[in-house]
Length: 69
Length: 237
Image (cartoon, rainbow over all chains, first blue to last red; front, side):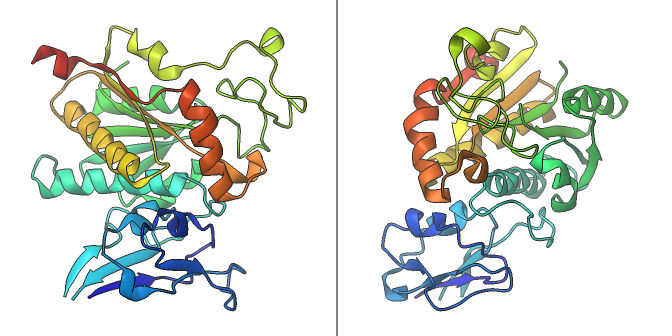
């Protein structure tokens, strides 16, 4: 199983990870706001993750960490 | 449990001050990871690297890279870097900057002067609106945008010149390979290397980060074609 961990404090809600993900795992939160005032990205479909790390490589704030169990 | 991806130690924990979706962060990471990998592969002694930060939005790059950094005056990063390289010839010296010697230059081309308020740059595309070209850049008035990589490839001292982009995952991986190759060439004592990275400036382009990436793909890449412009290392083989 792959775990995508997004540091919500660093996320600026730019949405580039959402675009980069080939499996539609991520979306910008519709309910949460972080301390910077952005809607952070969150895994909405975590089971679909294949661990390709496209999101992490695209994230301009290096806010994503990925682990495989 | 295994880690598939984590932040490199060569970046500090200070959060980037860049606007949402700015490509500087991606390029910072690629530079930092390349240095980290060269150290881990035993090709570079840990700490034996000095970066030169520019004036522009990336002026604070010295806060983000976990190595010795130097802040140069506007447009003078390569001049300062040549001095450092002469004084410390065995050190890996790189410059990180917007628009001679055996150094590596990471040239971020975002077709605009971002930090100062979105004015026209030498790399602004014809027709592109900026605060100093509100009706779009006119070629008759301002000339055509400069293609830095093609221009510098003609310079005899240049050893390796490549233009990259960080618009999608394959291109991000290619950009990192290019940066690392340039650093390796420097460690081998070859000539000047420059990696031009096409980048977005969503704030000053007036687009959201995802639209800005599409604008880059549709407008910048056709005018600034990606690829290796010069590689004396490959020519020699």
